[in-house]
Length: 192
Picture 1 (cartoon, rainbow, N blue to C red):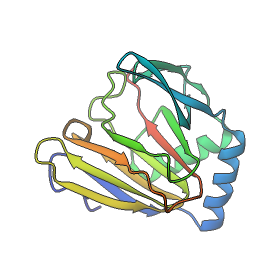
Picture 2 (cartoon, one colour):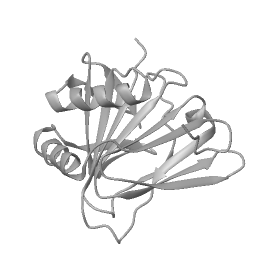
Picture 3 (cartoon, rainbow, N blue to C red):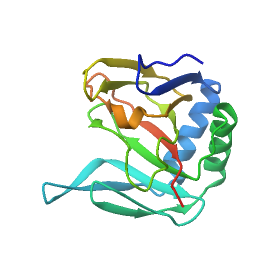
Picture 4 (cartoon, rainbow, N blue to C red):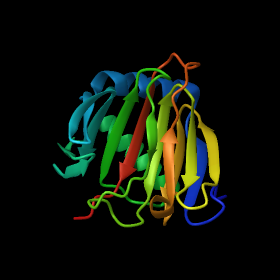
């Protein structure tokens, strides 16, 4: 499996894991069955409520803290367990939780960040499944500023692992060209 990063981390893109019909069926199911909530972050002491919606699921009612807010994991749905199993089988990784993101259109994105919260397994893998609108996803090296980007397809899997979160930032840039919604599942391992 080819590493998309030139150094200091590993990112593998597995491409589409399913047909468009299967991906669209999962997309509809996730939109309608997940307990979506607007994300909250405390930035410079001010509570920000995002348009993007999120949900947090896991093996246990794990607490997960990022951007100074804490979430408690909900029990897995049947579909999430199917998708987790699919991601684990493809990557030979094990995941115990999933942070889901719902972007209603291209105006919603994520700024440069790395997923290096203390609750996450150090240098653990994050498996990212994408459904719905195809969106650009970008990486930028924290020191050299080198960048790499790709388009994440409907029903595709991307894995970030090793020292990627230590050395690279990633983002989902906003775009006015996309009017459809995207659901992204990021399977993670919380350290117990």
